[in-house]
Length: 76
Image 1 (cartoon, rainbow, N blue to C red):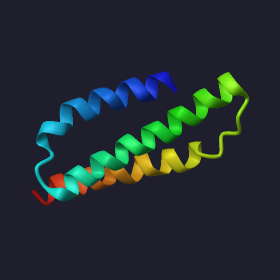
Image 2 (image 1 turned 60 degrees about the vertical axis):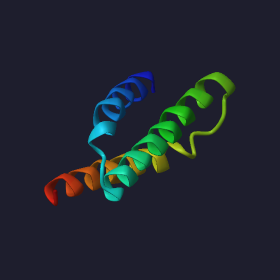
Image 3 (image 1 turned 180 degrees about the vertical axis):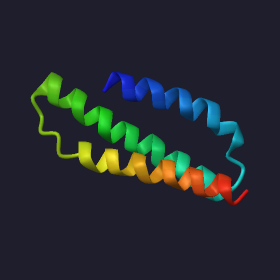
């Protein structure tokens, strides 16, 4: 969870200034939300014995966000 959060945090910081179109910003917002859901769900499971019901949703959202970012850059 920490590795995903750290790596995607670096990616968000690096890609943020490049997001000038709304589609790129939407992709980065999806990436942020997906990272929070995925990593947060795993951390909550470890610390509080909570179920990891949001981890698949966060992981899927991260995948779609990266695809959205790639589509935005190809259309640029």
